[in-house]
Image 1 (cartoon, rainbow, N blue to C red):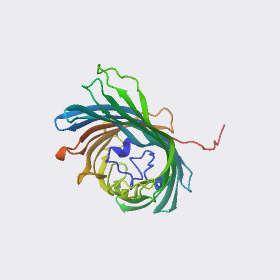
Image 2: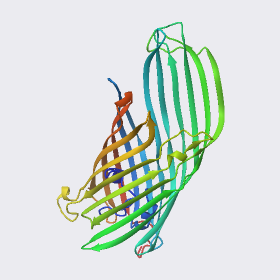
Image 3: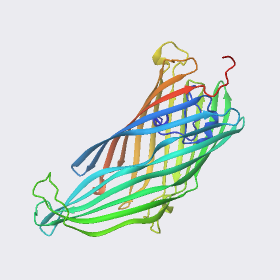
Image 4: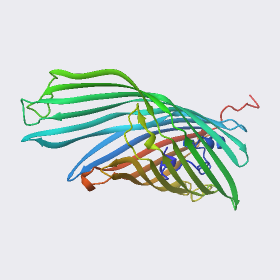
Length: 388
């Protein structure tokens, strides 16, 4: 969500944010801090530039990012449920080459993604400690295309492989938070989240066809034959264990700073019995926000200003070159006038300026700008009326 993405993606040690109810699905232990019924809806946008050598290509993507609900349950704690993206695939690029003296072009493309529908519960054990858990159902389809084309040889047959995978399964993650006042309205929160790893189901299909080369660049001929096909092949995907430790220090509704450290054991990832030899990944994030004066009558004094930075060593290594990610994040929280006495509204916006990969060793560098826009509603629901 924009609230946490604007601070480098902090979530593990986040419990409160400037007096408004916020749903922190990254650590279900935070649900016990919900004081108001909360609804959070958001959209996502992305601008990406892929570069290699002297060539570059831009792409754009916009989608609904999340719909989350949080409901306080009084002393026992709180619950949250909703749906949000789990993974996303979107790329298309071509590599020119030659076979003997014949020009060829190898095309790679991918699309699709998976979503996560979750239900979580958090409970406060005592005045300083809370625990929580999420049960999630993950589902979606990933599609990929790999083709070898002969752009200057009309008599040649292009070979194209279309593959798709439907993925579904359940995931379980858990969290805890320890919170302690430090005096002078300053408080400390320390959090942990984990996922013991889970198995997903996948149903794969593939079609390999041959198509005559077209004399026109914008025209594609019909396939002349199919040289390989299968459908409904089922496999199990073993997902990695993930762990995160984080903290935040806050002074009332004025400011908050924090940091997260994360680790994922991607070396244990399996597709069926196949081990793709991925690296274990790790990273960190730091960030914070400041609200100049939440009681002020001047509007820009009650706006939340957020800033963050994150670094990740991904699970991908190519030719002994680690593929790393770095990003700077910035965002704002704009409160809106209340239409009803018990309702509170806020628009949250975040931007992430990042880079992944490198141009060294003839590799691909990705530079991107991510936008997140969310609307948060806080209200008091399920209260018994004293008078009619």
